[in-house]
Every structure is written in C-alpha cells, then in structure tokens.
Image (cartoon, rainbow, N blue to C red):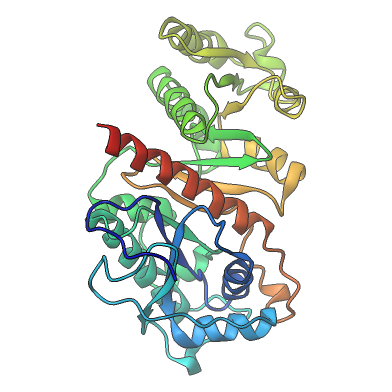
Amino acid sequence: MGTTAVPGRRTRPRIGILPGDPNGIGPELLAKLLADLDDEAKADVLVIGDNHVIAAGARTAGVTVSLPEWTADAEAMAEGETAHLVMETIAPGDVTPGRATEAAGRSILQTLETAVDLAQTGAIDGICFAPLNKTALHLGGMTEADEMQHIAAHLGLKGLAKELNAVEGLWTTRITSHVALKDVAGLITEDAILAAVRRLHDTISDAGVEKPRLAVAALNPHAGDNGNFGREEIDIIAPAVERAKAEGFDVVGPWPPDSVFLLGKDGRVDGIVAMYHDQSQIAMKMMGFDRGLTLLGGLPMPITSPAQGSAYDIVGKGVARVSALRFAFDLVATIAARRLARASAA
C-alpha cells in the first residue's frame, strides 16, 4: 500500500494503461507488464478496460491480476498502487481472438478516448496502450488515417500530431506517414522538416538526452546525386537543414537514405528525420522489432505504445514478448515525471 496522494500534489506520475485490441495480443502483454511491475516502478498505474478482457489476458499470460477498482475521484487512488477503471466496451461473446472486428474497434476507441479525457483533466499524466489494429479501428468507426490523428481530432488539434519511434536509444520521426508513396514528394516542405527537427529534438530531450544529435534523411537515391535523381534535396531538404542549424540544432543532412541509419546504429546521432513511413520503419523494425516503441508527438499528454502490431497469428499462445510494451511504459513514465517536475518547479 502506498501513501494517499495530496490532491494536486502527486510526487510521481500516474499512467493509464490500455489493453489495446481485445482480439489481439494486447491483453496478454498488459497482464505480463502488470505482473512484472514492483515497488520500483517509475509510475503508478491505472488500468483502463473491461474486466473480462483483462482476465482473459491474464489467463493467456499465466499470471494473476487482481486490482482494486478505481472510482471517479481522481485522488482516491493512493500513490504506489495499481488500480482498475472498469469499463464495459465489448461483450464477452463479441471477443473473437485473431480477427479484426467492428466490436473490437469500438472497444479500442472507447478506452482510448476515455484515457485521453482523463489525461486532459489531470487524473492521469500519460497513456501507454498495448497493440491496436487499424483495420478494427476503421471498422469500429474511426474516420481518420490512424489512432494518432483520431486522438488529435478528439482533442480538437490540427496539424500538430506526428508519430515518433525509438529502438535502443535511436529515435525517428517522419515528414509523411500513412499516405500513398506517390504523394510523398509533394508533401515535403521546408517548414515541415524544420517542425520535425524541433519535435524530435524536444522529444529526445524529454527522454533524458541533454544535447540530441540529429540527421535528416534525403528523399532520393544517393541524396539526389546533385540533382540527377531529383531536386528535393537541393531545393527543400538542404535549405531546411540550414535553417535548423541556424536555430542552434545539432543536425546534419540531407544524408543518403541507404546509409543514414548507420549513423544511428553506430551511435553517431540520437535521432533521424525520415521523409516517409517505410524509409524509417523498415530500418527500425530490423534493428529491434520486439524492442521498438512509438510515441505520439505533438499532443498535450505523452502517449506511447509498442511498435509491434496485434499479432493475430499468435493470440492465445502465451508467447508474446512484453519487452516493447515495458519500454513504452518506462518512456511515458519518464516523460511524465519530467513534466511533473517542471510543473512543480514553475
């Protein structure tokens, strides 16, 4: 048992954790994470979701999860404790492991929106969700491209949210994400690159790196080969990098995309700005698929998740690896703690 928190004066962050897709490996991963937490955990935990979903995940994981129910009083939960905000988002009979369904998508959206609303009120300081499934989300009513844009729309934000990824200390973000490859070049602008550099720098700083070193990837093969393979490097990317340097950022580029990740792998940079989704994601997942995490940047609260998917092919087998979810939890706890400390010092 911890000591009861003083209203408005929490000394450590409280993180909302969600089971993700009830038809995927998320409930199993959540149970494994909870079983692994101890008094040395970096944050208190509020589990948000259905009782039967959490229980099913615990059975698959082979662990025991017993949580006190959390009430509407944001301070009724004592520091040092884990509690459960019980929801009813999906009927037990509608859980169909290994499938993307409308019922599962609605469940994901309800838990996610509830967590975001709690963070907005200050009841929790960050959110970590187990793997989701975009097909299920769209079946469940999501009209945006992904969950990050859905959260931004739910909060009434425009043009701010961008995904960041990390594996073993290397961070990435990208100028374009879930768009067709044929549209990428037209969406790359100096302002977008400069905004990505700022966002990546600030995120890495929040994660504890004092002076982040960054690289910006080129778009074309061999960084355009002096204009022979495209002029985006000359006309857009290089000028954006120079603007970033003028603002004081430690950044290089445009760097050829087939070698830029070697800079990160060798520890020469802490973060890379890519131009499109697969330019960064293929490299990052090769570097550590079961260790990667995602941070939804540009939102008023830190939100993380493991980079892996809902893994329908191994649902119910008890073999899902919890390492990426643990990294995601540790990161959101670190960022939330630093923000609480800054707020207390202000």
